[in-house]
Structures are given as C-alpha cells and as structure tokens.
Length: 175
Figure (tube, rainbow, N blue to C red):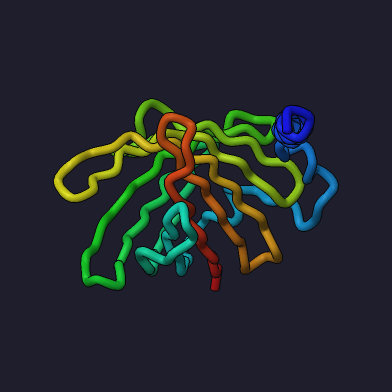
C-alpha cells in the first residue's frame, strides 16, 4: 500500500513538472499575428463561458471595433449575452515592440501583459468580474491563435487563488 502511494505521488509530481506552453513555442507558426493589423476595423466574435466542470453557463456575441494611432490602439467590445444582458469593455492596447503588448481597461486590475510569437498571443491579466451582486478578481491566462487572415480562436482559462473556475472560448471573424 505504501509503495503504491509513493508511486502515485511520484507520478503526480512528475506530471506537475510538465512545462506549460509559452509564446515562443509558436514562433515558427504562420500566419504571423500582428494585433495592429488584425484588430483594426470591425470584427465579430462568438463565445461561451464554461464552468470548471465544462458545463456551458453563458453564450455571447461580441461586436468589436479596433482603431490604431501609431503604437496605441483602442478596442471597443460590445457584448450581447444569451440571457439578454449586455456589457461593454474598451481596451487601450500599446505595442511595446518585439511582440510585447500592454493593455488596460476599466475592469482590468492593473495592466494586461501580452506576448505574441508566430500565430499566437498570450495575455495575462486580472479581471474584476461582477457575479450575483459580488465582485471577484479573477486571473486570466488568455491565448489567441490566428488561423488565417479572417479567423482567430481564443481560449482563456480563469482562476481564483490558483484554482481553475472556468474557461472562455471565442472565435473571432474579420470581414
């Protein structure tokens, strides 16, 4: 029994040592994602939020408009949820060079930091989310993957105190 417990512990520790992906893993992937090009003009996104068990809790459509002046962009997002509610977020995104970005929005705590390599972008940030009259600060590990010049897929894992609370999945379409 003790040997089995030790073996199970060793396997768990080794599995925990597996390296998480980094933007550099996608450096050779094409097409190359450039936020200033992709998030310029109108876009539409369709998405859903799944809880930690994988059950869909909310579906939504986002109408987006991006505008850039030099290295500073504004991304307006208007959300329409399946329950009839709406929301709006306006990002200010700054290209810092070498594939790095900084983003701010009124409901983002501090700054979002992003790094793009190849066709992928990883954002890390804390979002202040209102839920049933209470507000929670939730950490996002947000990955975007450019499929072609029109389609980008997005998966964001959400956590609180390091514990997964759900995922957001989006597909962006650029006309």
